[in-house]
Length: 387
Image (cartoon, rainbow, N blue to C red; front, side, top):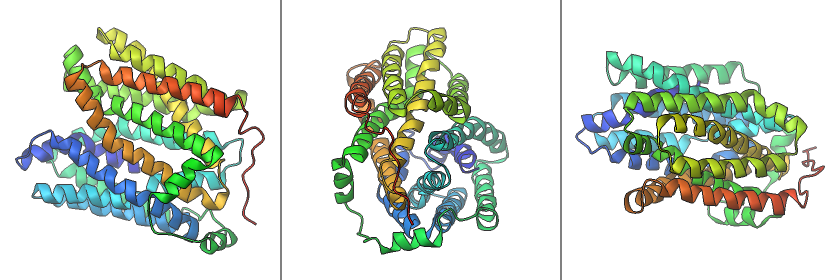
């Protein structure tokens, strides 16, 4: 529900900016404002969910999303438009808390499959959201924002009255007893210094940087390199969403039962590396459609398995904070990756972002195989359970 609402309004942000007399290039800064808010807030929201429970923080996050969407619907200036995205970012720990909730209610064997459903929800949201948003916008530019706010309100009611808390009183007490600090870069540096956790975060840093360059520059690349229309680009993004949803919603459960998660990570990173380089030199539409198959599947597998490994790197009472640190890393890359990719695209060539991403993923494949797979780091790993 959250991702469908998100998908309602994302394609319309350029229209909002044009309506207020801004340049379309501000869309990137608008997305960066949201990512910057998440960068600072997600670890705090995650740690608070360890302390007070997942349910209260989900209510806080979805409530912030509803408020941000109402601000967007009533916006009459660029200032309010930016404020709506910042509010959504600062309260947007919903994915962090949802991942922690899934980690709470799944065992080691089914963790990746459970987290895969979150990835599938992202994929489905970005398939159906833009479609419905496009239909609603015919009634007015603000209508999709108000409809998405209505979905968030319904989501709040379901969380409040249907969703059970995943942490026991004893687990929350354990979370309260652990020392808490104000947000700083120190928790991130400490996490990177830990053997298991630091290795997974290292991989996530390089993977998300490469993938967000692809994600943010895909439409520009398809328009400049192949001359595709906005409608064609939308269909291609929906096609990617379907592939990711299929692998994360069902395929990942089959794969993790047959192969070690570290092996899957190394292979997926290698396939994604080759796919990004092939994408960088796309000559025509048919070639692109074919290349997007291994690219989407490998990205879906890698993202899900890394989150599973992340949850297994720390005790249960630290899951929320750790997922928050991970979300901050992703948000940081959502800020810097499009900017760096854009500079490379404009100064070096349209092929440069894909080539750089491919190099980064090649390093990820080698790192995972040598440090995490070859040493069997996660073999038999069982997370410490709260008593």
